[in-house]
Length: 323
Image 1 (tube, rainbow, N blue to C red):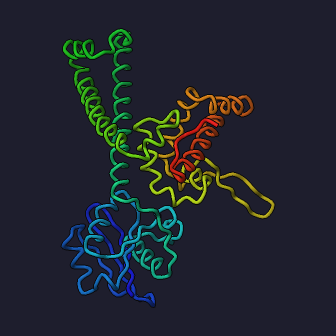
Image 2 (image 1 turned 90 degrees about the horizontal axis):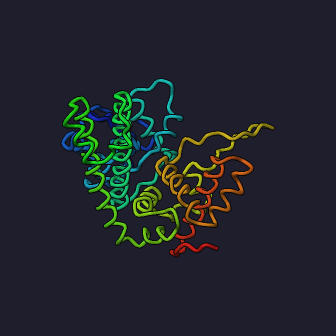
Protein backbone atom coordinates (compact mmCIF):
# COMPACT_ATOMS: atom_id res chain seq x y z
CA UNK A 1 0.00 0.00 0.00
CA UNK A 2 1.15 3.54 -0.77
CA UNK A 3 0.22 6.81 0.91
CA UNK A 4 0.05 10.24 -0.73
CA UNK A 5 -0.18 13.66 0.89
CA UNK A 6 -1.19 16.60 -1.31
CA UNK A 7 -0.63 20.23 -0.30
CA UNK A 8 -3.09 22.04 -2.58
CA UNK A 9 -2.81 25.68 -3.64
CA UNK A 10 -4.66 27.82 -6.14
CA UNK A 11 -2.11 27.35 -8.92
CA UNK A 12 -0.08 24.32 -7.83
CA UNK A 13 0.00 21.09 -5.85
CA UNK A 14 2.94 19.67 -3.95
CA UNK A 15 2.50 15.92 -3.43
CA UNK A 16 4.49 13.22 -1.66
CA UNK A 17 4.06 9.45 -1.94
CA UNK A 18 5.40 7.07 0.73
CA UNK A 19 5.53 3.31 0.93
CA UNK A 20 4.44 1.30 3.96
CA UNK A 21 7.87 1.72 5.57
CA UNK A 22 7.83 5.53 5.32
CA UNK A 23 10.25 5.81 2.42
CA UNK A 24 9.52 8.62 -0.05
CA UNK A 25 8.86 7.14 -3.48
CA UNK A 26 7.87 10.29 -5.31
CA UNK A 27 7.64 14.00 -4.43
CA UNK A 28 6.97 16.80 -6.91
CA UNK A 29 5.32 20.19 -7.31
CA UNK A 30 3.13 20.47 -10.40
CA UNK A 31 0.36 22.72 -11.82
CA UNK A 32 -3.14 22.30 -10.43
CA UNK A 33 -4.93 20.63 -13.33
CA UNK A 34 -6.28 17.19 -14.21
CA UNK A 35 -3.46 16.27 -16.61
CA UNK A 36 -0.71 17.05 -14.08
CA UNK A 37 -2.46 15.10 -11.31
CA UNK A 38 -2.84 12.07 -13.61
CA UNK A 39 0.81 12.36 -14.64
CA UNK A 40 2.01 12.43 -11.03
CA UNK A 41 -0.05 9.33 -10.12
CA UNK A 42 0.79 7.49 -13.36
CA UNK A 43 1.71 3.86 -12.84
CA UNK A 44 -0.04 3.57 -9.47
CA UNK A 45 -3.48 1.96 -9.53
CA UNK A 46 -6.22 3.53 -7.43
CA UNK A 47 -6.54 0.27 -5.45
CA UNK A 48 -2.99 0.50 -4.06
CA UNK A 49 -2.89 4.11 -2.83
CA UNK A 50 -4.71 6.39 -0.37
CA UNK A 51 -4.57 10.18 -0.71
CA UNK A 52 -4.86 12.84 2.00
CA UNK A 53 -5.61 16.52 1.39
CA UNK A 54 -6.30 19.33 3.84
CA UNK A 55 -9.75 20.89 4.17
CA UNK A 56 -8.54 24.26 2.89
CA UNK A 57 -10.66 26.73 0.93
CA UNK A 58 -10.13 24.98 -2.44
CA UNK A 59 -10.28 21.32 -1.39
CA UNK A 60 -13.54 20.48 -3.15
CA UNK A 61 -12.21 20.71 -6.70
CA UNK A 62 -9.27 18.34 -6.25
CA UNK A 63 -11.31 16.06 -3.97
CA UNK A 64 -14.04 15.68 -6.61
CA UNK A 65 -11.48 15.06 -9.37
CA UNK A 66 -9.63 12.38 -7.40
CA UNK A 67 -12.90 10.65 -6.46
CA UNK A 68 -13.98 10.65 -10.11
CA UNK A 69 -10.64 9.02 -10.99
CA UNK A 70 -11.45 6.28 -8.49
CA UNK A 71 -8.99 7.11 -5.70
CA UNK A 72 -9.71 6.79 -1.98
CA UNK A 73 -9.41 10.32 -0.57
CA UNK A 74 -9.36 11.37 3.07
CA UNK A 75 -9.82 14.95 4.23
CA UNK A 76 -7.53 16.24 6.99
CA UNK A 77 -8.39 18.84 9.63
CA UNK A 78 -5.92 21.73 8.98
CA UNK A 79 -6.19 23.06 12.56
CA UNK A 80 -4.88 19.76 13.92
CA UNK A 81 -2.31 19.03 11.21
CA UNK A 82 -0.75 22.47 11.76
CA UNK A 83 -0.35 21.65 15.45
CA UNK A 84 1.44 18.43 14.51
CA UNK A 85 3.66 20.07 11.87
CA UNK A 86 7.25 21.02 12.66
CA UNK A 87 8.56 24.58 12.77
CA UNK A 88 10.04 24.35 9.30
CA UNK A 89 6.94 24.84 7.17
CA UNK A 90 7.20 24.39 3.41
CA UNK A 91 4.90 22.79 0.84
CA UNK A 92 7.20 19.74 0.66
CA UNK A 93 7.18 19.37 4.45
CA UNK A 94 3.38 19.72 4.57
CA UNK A 95 2.83 17.06 1.88
CA UNK A 96 5.28 14.70 3.61
CA UNK A 97 3.54 15.15 6.97
CA UNK A 98 0.13 14.42 5.42
CA UNK A 99 1.48 11.26 3.79
CA UNK A 100 3.13 10.15 7.04
CA UNK A 101 0.00 10.78 9.15
CA UNK A 102 -2.00 8.78 6.63
CA UNK A 103 0.56 5.95 6.67
CA UNK A 104 0.59 5.71 10.47
CA UNK A 105 -3.21 6.06 10.74
CA UNK A 106 -2.90 9.28 12.78
CA UNK A 107 -4.51 11.58 10.21
CA UNK A 108 -7.00 13.92 11.97
CA UNK A 109 -9.99 13.75 9.63
CA UNK A 110 -13.00 16.00 9.13
CA UNK A 111 -16.53 15.12 8.10
CA UNK A 112 -17.26 15.30 4.36
CA UNK A 113 -20.91 16.15 3.61
CA UNK A 114 -22.63 14.58 0.62
CA UNK A 115 -23.30 16.60 -2.54
CA UNK A 116 -26.81 17.58 -1.41
CA UNK A 117 -25.51 19.05 1.86
CA UNK A 118 -22.62 20.78 0.09
CA UNK A 119 -25.16 22.36 -2.26
CA UNK A 120 -27.23 23.55 0.70
CA UNK A 121 -24.11 25.01 2.30
CA UNK A 122 -23.31 26.89 -0.89
CA UNK A 123 -26.72 28.49 -1.25
CA UNK A 124 -27.25 29.35 2.44
CA UNK A 125 -23.76 30.77 2.89
CA UNK A 126 -24.20 32.73 -0.33
CA UNK A 127 -27.46 34.18 1.00
CA UNK A 128 -25.76 35.09 4.28
CA UNK A 129 -22.87 36.80 2.47
CA UNK A 130 -25.28 38.75 0.26
CA UNK A 131 -27.15 40.01 3.34
CA UNK A 132 -23.89 41.04 4.99
CA UNK A 133 -22.64 42.86 1.87
CA UNK A 134 -25.97 44.65 1.42
CA UNK A 135 -25.88 45.78 5.07
CA UNK A 136 -22.36 47.14 4.57
CA UNK A 137 -23.41 49.09 1.46
CA UNK A 138 -26.51 50.35 3.27
CA UNK A 139 -24.33 51.61 6.15
CA UNK A 140 -22.08 53.45 3.65
CA UNK A 141 -25.11 55.10 2.01
CA UNK A 142 -26.52 56.14 5.39
CA UNK A 143 -23.13 57.54 6.40
CA UNK A 144 -22.97 59.56 3.19
CA UNK A 145 -26.49 60.91 3.74
CA UNK A 146 -25.66 61.91 7.32
CA UNK A 147 -22.58 63.81 6.12
CA UNK A 148 -24.85 65.64 3.66
CA UNK A 149 -27.30 66.47 6.46
CA UNK A 150 -30.07 64.32 4.94
CA UNK A 151 -32.35 62.32 7.26
CA UNK A 152 -32.39 58.97 5.52
CA UNK A 153 -35.43 57.68 7.42
CA UNK A 154 -37.67 59.75 5.16
CA UNK A 155 -36.17 58.58 1.87
CA UNK A 156 -35.27 54.92 2.48
CA UNK A 157 -37.42 53.44 -0.25
CA UNK A 158 -36.80 52.52 -3.86
CA UNK A 159 -38.42 55.59 -5.40
CA UNK A 160 -36.62 58.09 -3.15
CA UNK A 161 -33.24 56.37 -3.48
CA UNK A 162 -33.56 56.24 -7.27
CA UNK A 163 -34.30 59.99 -7.28
CA UNK A 164 -31.29 60.59 -5.02
CA UNK A 165 -29.07 58.59 -7.41
CA UNK A 166 -30.19 60.80 -10.30
CA UNK A 167 -29.55 64.03 -8.37
CA UNK A 168 -26.26 63.02 -6.73
CA UNK A 169 -23.79 61.11 -8.98
CA UNK A 170 -21.39 60.62 -6.03
CA UNK A 171 -23.80 58.17 -4.40
CA UNK A 172 -25.24 56.66 -7.59
CA UNK A 173 -22.88 53.66 -7.80
CA UNK A 174 -23.43 52.67 -4.17
CA UNK A 175 -27.21 52.82 -4.58
CA UNK A 176 -27.02 50.72 -7.77
CA UNK A 177 -24.90 48.11 -5.96
CA UNK A 178 -27.38 48.11 -3.06
CA UNK A 179 -30.37 47.36 -5.33
CA UNK A 180 -28.41 44.79 -7.30
CA UNK A 181 -27.55 42.90 -4.10
CA UNK A 182 -31.14 43.16 -2.89
CA UNK A 183 -32.48 41.67 -6.14
CA UNK A 184 -29.97 38.82 -6.06
CA UNK A 185 -30.87 38.17 -2.42
CA UNK A 186 -34.56 37.93 -3.35
CA UNK A 187 -33.77 35.43 -6.12
CA UNK A 188 -31.68 33.27 -3.78
CA UNK A 189 -34.48 33.36 -1.19
CA UNK A 190 -36.96 32.14 -3.82
CA UNK A 191 -34.73 29.12 -4.42
CA UNK A 192 -34.34 28.56 -0.67
CA UNK A 193 -38.12 28.64 -0.10
CA UNK A 194 -38.63 26.09 -2.88
CA UNK A 195 -36.03 23.73 -1.40
CA UNK A 196 -37.30 24.11 2.17
CA UNK A 197 -40.90 23.48 1.14
CA UNK A 198 -40.00 20.06 -0.31
CA UNK A 199 -37.51 18.97 2.37
CA UNK A 200 -38.90 16.88 5.21
CA UNK A 201 -36.11 17.72 7.70
CA UNK A 202 -36.51 21.45 7.02
CA UNK A 203 -40.23 21.23 7.77
CA UNK A 204 -39.45 19.45 11.03
CA UNK A 205 -37.12 22.27 12.09
CA UNK A 206 -39.57 24.98 11.00
CA UNK A 207 -42.06 23.62 13.53
CA UNK A 208 -39.78 25.17 16.20
CA UNK A 209 -40.46 28.88 16.89
CA UNK A 210 -37.63 31.11 15.69
CA UNK A 211 -36.59 28.87 12.78
CA UNK A 212 -37.68 29.78 9.26
CA UNK A 213 -36.98 28.60 5.74
CA UNK A 214 -33.48 30.02 5.46
CA UNK A 215 -32.35 29.14 8.99
CA UNK A 216 -33.73 25.59 8.77
CA UNK A 217 -31.69 24.89 5.62
CA UNK A 218 -28.55 26.48 7.03
CA UNK A 219 -28.82 24.45 10.24
CA UNK A 220 -29.28 21.23 8.25
CA UNK A 221 -26.44 22.08 5.86
CA UNK A 222 -23.98 22.82 8.65
CA UNK A 223 -24.95 19.79 10.76
CA UNK A 224 -24.98 17.31 7.88
CA UNK A 225 -25.79 13.80 9.07
CA UNK A 226 -27.19 14.09 12.62
CA UNK A 227 -26.10 10.49 13.30
CA UNK A 228 -22.46 11.56 13.52
CA UNK A 229 -23.31 13.28 16.83
CA UNK A 230 -23.86 10.67 19.51
CA UNK A 231 -25.45 13.16 21.91
CA UNK A 232 -26.76 16.75 22.07
CA UNK A 233 -23.57 17.72 23.90
CA UNK A 234 -21.47 16.79 20.87
CA UNK A 235 -23.67 18.95 18.63
CA UNK A 236 -23.42 21.87 21.08
CA UNK A 237 -19.65 21.50 21.17
CA UNK A 238 -19.52 21.43 17.36
CA UNK A 239 -21.35 24.76 17.35
CA UNK A 240 -18.85 26.21 19.83
CA UNK A 241 -21.47 26.90 22.47
CA UNK A 242 -19.76 25.06 25.29
CA UNK A 243 -16.26 26.06 26.46
CA UNK A 244 -13.32 23.72 26.23
CA UNK A 245 -11.66 22.70 29.50
CA UNK A 246 -7.93 22.75 30.20
CA UNK A 247 -6.74 20.63 33.12
CA UNK A 248 -3.17 20.38 34.41
CA UNK A 249 -2.47 19.21 37.95
CA UNK A 250 -4.69 21.25 40.25
CA UNK A 251 -5.35 23.86 37.57
CA UNK A 252 -8.59 23.87 35.62
CA UNK A 253 -9.89 26.65 33.38
CA UNK A 254 -12.21 27.21 30.44
CA UNK A 255 -10.54 27.78 27.08
CA UNK A 256 -11.89 28.84 23.71
CA UNK A 257 -12.49 26.02 21.27
CA UNK A 258 -11.39 27.13 17.79
CA UNK A 259 -12.40 23.88 16.03
CA UNK A 260 -16.06 24.85 15.72
CA UNK A 261 -18.57 25.45 12.95
CA UNK A 262 -18.89 29.23 13.00
CA UNK A 263 -21.82 29.22 10.58
CA UNK A 264 -23.88 26.94 12.81
CA UNK A 265 -22.96 29.00 15.85
CA UNK A 266 -24.06 32.21 14.13
CA UNK A 267 -27.39 30.95 12.78
CA UNK A 268 -28.53 29.24 15.99
CA UNK A 269 -27.61 32.37 17.96
CA UNK A 270 -29.74 34.43 15.56
CA UNK A 271 -32.63 31.97 15.92
CA UNK A 272 -32.40 32.07 19.72
CA UNK A 273 -33.28 35.77 19.72
CA UNK A 274 -36.44 35.18 17.70
CA UNK A 275 -37.36 32.09 19.73
CA UNK A 276 -37.38 34.04 22.99
CA UNK A 277 -39.98 36.41 21.51
CA UNK A 278 -42.21 33.70 20.01
CA UNK A 279 -42.19 30.83 22.50
CA UNK A 280 -43.09 31.01 26.22
CA UNK A 281 -40.80 28.08 27.03
CA UNK A 282 -37.71 29.80 25.65
CA UNK A 283 -38.83 33.16 26.98
CA UNK A 284 -39.11 31.94 30.56
CA UNK A 285 -35.76 30.18 30.31
CA UNK A 286 -34.12 33.29 28.84
CA UNK A 287 -35.35 35.71 31.54
CA UNK A 288 -34.51 33.27 34.34
CA UNK A 289 -30.84 33.21 33.27
CA UNK A 290 -30.70 36.86 32.24
CA UNK A 291 -31.52 38.01 35.78
CA UNK A 292 -28.50 36.16 37.14
CA UNK A 293 -25.91 36.24 34.35
CA UNK A 294 -26.88 38.86 31.78
CA UNK A 295 -28.41 38.78 28.32
CA UNK A 296 -25.41 37.36 26.39
CA UNK A 297 -25.16 34.31 28.63
CA UNK A 298 -28.93 33.92 28.48
CA UNK A 299 -28.94 34.02 24.65
CA UNK A 300 -26.21 31.38 24.51
CA UNK A 301 -28.16 29.22 26.97
CA UNK A 302 -31.27 29.43 24.76
CA UNK A 303 -29.16 28.55 21.72
CA UNK A 304 -27.81 25.49 23.55
CA UNK A 305 -31.33 24.42 24.53
CA UNK A 306 -32.48 24.83 20.92
CA UNK A 307 -29.62 22.65 19.65
CA UNK A 308 -30.47 20.01 22.25
CA UNK A 309 -34.09 19.94 21.05
CA UNK A 310 -32.97 19.97 17.40
CA UNK A 311 -30.81 16.89 18.05
CA UNK A 312 -33.83 15.00 19.39
CA UNK A 313 -36.13 16.28 16.63
CA UNK A 314 -33.79 15.13 13.83
CA UNK A 315 -32.78 11.90 15.56
CA UNK A 316 -36.37 10.86 16.29
CA UNK A 317 -37.87 12.54 13.20
CA UNK A 318 -40.48 14.44 15.19
CA UNK A 319 -41.81 17.99 15.25
CA UNK A 320 -41.35 20.51 18.05
CA UNK A 321 -43.50 20.22 21.15
CA UNK A 322 -43.70 23.00 23.73
CA UNK A 323 -43.51 20.79 26.82
